[in-house]
Length: 223
Image (tube, rainbow, N blue to C red; front, side):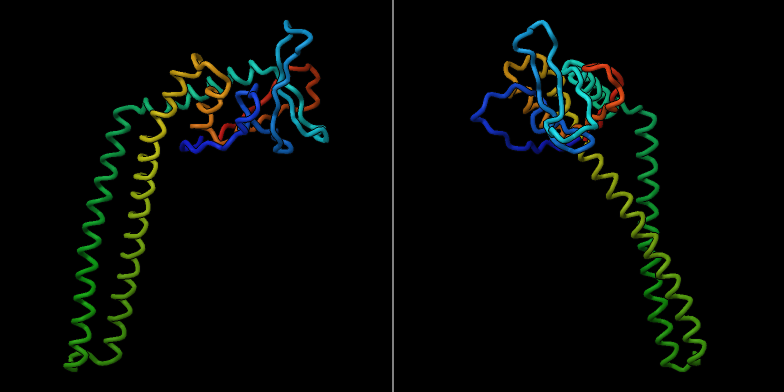
């Protein structure tokens, strides 16, 4: 799901598809269009691929996809907002351990630099032969490289966690807004804007071998 960027739409036309600019055919990545039965209003509208050359995609009833998308949005919200307290504490404790390890690594690196300087001093005072100096340098530099590698790894792990946490804190209110306002939105455009506030694309896939039009097994992938 997206962080909230919405693709532009042509406001000069009357929108009839809440998934405009969002729902794509899995096979050809073309838009899925909304197809009502104007001459038979009792028949339920379908969604179908706009690519006339796409022979793989099968149509599906609009209400099935809409219900499925809203259900997945609800599950996504519950996943983001209902992380167990124990798990949160466990993650927090893990982060604290990593931060303490970072402090230790930084202190060790300071000591390494002091050791390197001392080795040069001992060489200059001829307390070390060149061979001994080179051996000590190799050992100390290898230790320094190991510490720097571990330091960079931990910093990267903490940065990734911070980024994920920040994005979650930004996304949760947007998802909640969609859940609260989608059903009561007055227009198709309003519903479309709500979906685009949290969704980049939805890929729809239904095997053409499934002959039952409008229903049958299908999958959607929300991005």
